[in-house]
Length: 94
Image 1 (cartoon, rainbow, N blue to C red):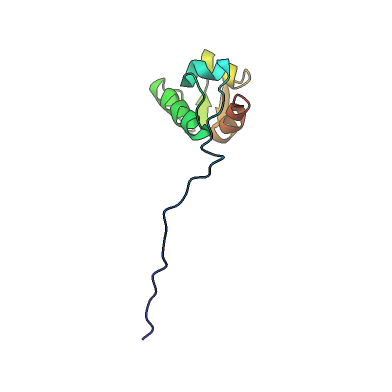
Image 2 (spheres, helix red, strand yellow):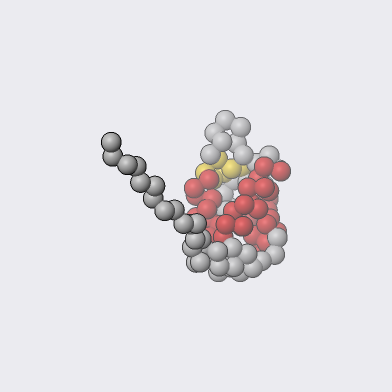
């Protein structure tokens, strides 16, 4: 019988670029709070805001129905899908 080898697994290191605090635009700060903060924290706070204000579409859970504050972040769009949301939010980070 062949012996099974266990691969030595080290802790996964976070990507430094992903964790870098970024400046948050004025429009986005109204939703997630003042920055600077890492992109992952921005997305996390954005989802908290969406769920708190019940902005996720009831029929298609991928879609976000924007309120007045989110419309400013989404470039005036009333509804965006969650993948487009990430793209639009990145325009407000520098």
